[in-house]
Image 1 (cartoon, rainbow, N blue to C red):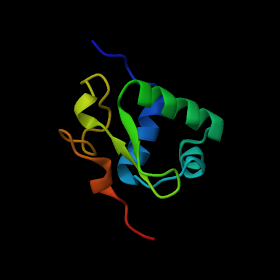
Image 2 (cartoon, helix red, strand yellow):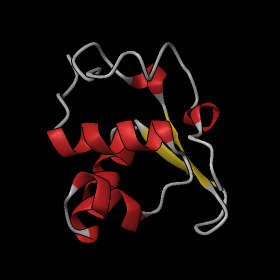
Image 3 (spheres, rainbow, N blue to C red):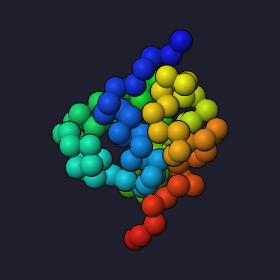
Image 4 (cartoon, helix red, strand yellow):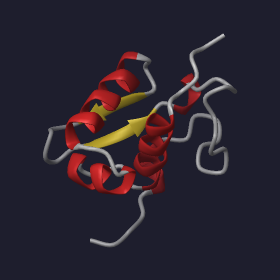
Amino acid sequence: MGEKLGENEVKILESISSDPHITIQQLSEEVQISTTAVENNIKKLKEKDLLKRVGSPKGGHWEVIASKLSPHHIFFPSRLEGSVRASEGNRGGA
């Protein structure tokens, strides 16, 4: 029914679910793609209503909208269960 996510989209969702305060630069390093590619993937994820930004660009955080993920999207079920908010899974460390 829904679109399948690309490999980079999945990696971005995994990284954000682990650290909702992650930056574009950090995502670029983790996923090993350019910051422009990260921004393009984030735009796609927002358009699919799978990701949203809460708060300001510098002080806010990301939320993965797990309830919108179809079975085709979920490649990392241990990290997202039901409608778990990504902000509850912060990695810790300052």
